Length: 397
Image 1 (cartoon, rainbow, N blue to C red):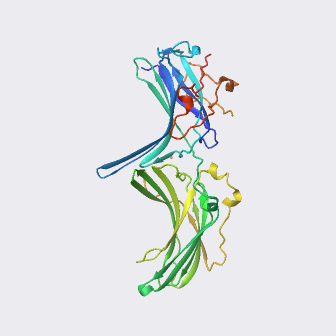
Image 2: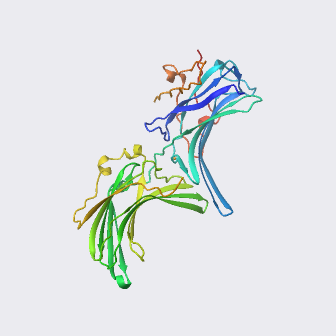
Image 3: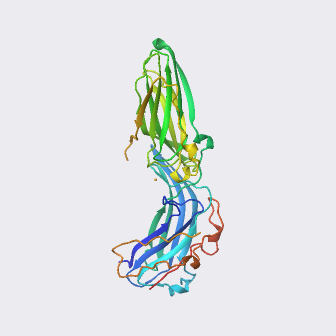
């Protein structure tokens, strides 16, 4: 039976929403409990960011992968003879009880996509700790980092009301023209917020029709020249019937689901887009449609833009008739400086050992981030023959 118990990696996110972003400093600890003294070859920590997409089309399988960064360092490092370099560790022997190896790491300050989990792919940022011992299987512990990109595809103009119009000439017995103009109060929002949509319809034909509103998600997985798009209707609204030869103004409120992934535009194998579609359902005819691209940003990023730009609403002046609808998400398918050290896990199973708290003044121990930055496909120079950026300490009582 392995003497290594309760093996975990913990970290403190630098933001209130438990996320980290490019250039942030991750401060954490590799924690494990030993039931006896153990001789180790090394204790390493690896941090990597990867994206992959995969799907099948008949007998053909498609797979694409991107690596944004991968760094590895030793919190207990071996020399060529297998001896631990840190003299404070008394050779290769770790003491019985709870051991806490603290580290600090600066994420590459470059454009990388946010974490994402989808049906045919994912983008993940993982911390993996490994304890290597001679003549034993290595012990591993993983922790996924919730990563948020600071990159946004929207322009300032999208923060303001967006408008579009469409017209259709009816043929046959339903001769006449149908015109529709639609407006949304802004083209950028966050999960949980509400959009205002107004549609003005002029039906000069002899056909009845119904206005409809739809919030749609489009995810595209790519592998070289092959793509696999998936569409999902997040919410849908149906208005009252518009009589022949009449005019009507219809407004609705579309609430953005609080659990959807933000817009993803800076990954070449996975993209996530959103659209608001306003259209007229006409029997036995092509439906005229106005489509608005919608950028969904995490709340923390959206808050940096002026409140007055976010808060502008759409007026309804001149409406012949106004009807208000409440829109809710409709699932359409079945089943993503100094920083405090994280508090230790309160586990009833951890008994008989002394938890090694980071003492006051921990910054003097060298828990600092490297000053250099890296490109997305390179390892930081500090990890290529330079001293490790993972500053570590073990404390015993």
